[in-house]
Length: 365
Image: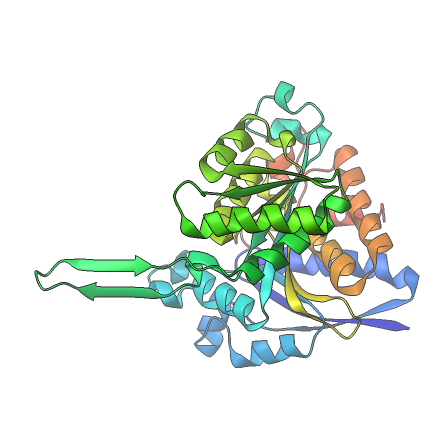
């Protein structure tokens, strides 16, 4: 029996409760195929601060290093917002784990089923068939990881600076991910930058143009400034197929994409690294696009679909099990189409809880 070895980091808020049912769905999907789940849980985020004094303890890193992938929940919440910014769960856990494992590529599907168009703030006539796009975000470069400095001038004024840095090689490797995604979809890539202002964006646009022309000339490449891209996302998201962009722009645009796609409870993500695991597939971290939802934590009413779909991405990218990933994705879609909805996507139907939603999905595997 083949074993799937991965780390489970449930995190805070609704993280543990949606993780629990995601693992149940994973087991239901993999067991008939003769696959065994071998996972180890570890603390991350606020709960890790409370228990071990660090949002990302060395013991958690150790568990992840012994694994072929990481299934991640969500971190943070009001309890830890009074901590210094550098010690808060989101910054002290997610950024270091991305850096430690060189998780440079974030793939965030923007998926809205036709049956859930009422969930989007866009008018249904703008998205009559729903939404199906992908944002590919560079994750370990740019202004988030560039040199930072704060100092006081002679006149007492205070200056803070964040430096945006990109190398051609960093841009080329994220383009490779976008190219692979576009080849499996419609063959269209839109590269987003701010080349009319930023020197890093000038390099980004030049590199994207030359690299895709050389390595994937059959693809259709377009360029947009980030402000226009944000406007176009709100006007007509389906004009895009694969978006590729740098770290900060990707952070903002993927969140906007999450809003136009309705509930964050339906949106998954994959962060892929430079190293392969023992199966010869990329080591990756898989997490819902939403947060910890502390206002409903513990009530078992949270939508588990994003966590379940993130687990499906883990099967696809880190274990090469595309067929089983598709079974899970189809089961989620069918459950929603059949009227099984948590409160965030109910819209006139009677909402069900986290466990009932997971059971509906398991029944359709």
